[in-house]
Image 1 (cartoon, rainbow, N blue to C red):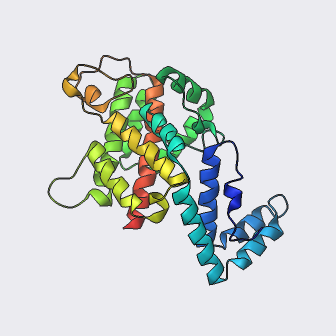
Image 2: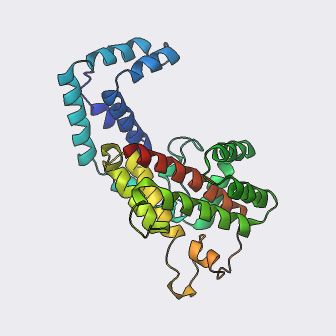
Image 3: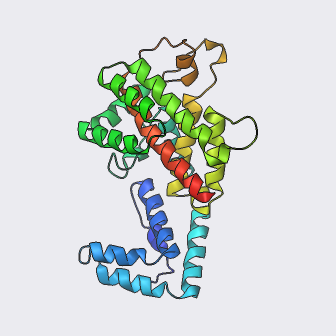
Length: 281
């Protein structure tokens, strides 16, 4: 198969996120062919080490790299991503960030029919070990250690209202402090700050074009729109957690362990995206 032949993307059957991930992998390779040398070192036999080196050598030719990049971009823009984007948007409405390290590839391609079903499906995949690793990672990267420790204390003692409130504040704090939101007298907060962050990210071709990153962005935008949705007179509280109902003392729903887990995962994603934005400058 020629390195500039991307028909393999059309041959991928089954899960659409696998297609999106394959395109991302191909784009990463064309931008930095030396990635393949690292793959060859780590998996010299089962990952086809000799083939990786051959592809890497082909990509040293500027004309081949240019053609491959052009073909990938054309494919990304011609393929109909709207069905899988709608699924990722739906997960965001259920309050779940599509964390790929949590489940097998393809899990997020199927959207449950209800909030309850969505929560049950994801919670079945979450182990206590995963939560401990997630909290440890966040403890190292949080911008407010004291507030985060209190959120963990509340979580461990089943004080889910307090835990949710603290985690929402931490997420809002990252969004408000991102480089894309600094400047002028009035910084945006909540969903407005999130939109500024996403605008900055999508200036980068990797984030702005269809494919793996775009699915993540669509999911994150949907999550923010749901969690920070206007209260509209506090007359019809949504099924999922809403920041305005909670922080204004108007929530009548029972805050759950699942709500807090969603926010721990979302907090990490917010930190991750803000770091990308900072690198973007």
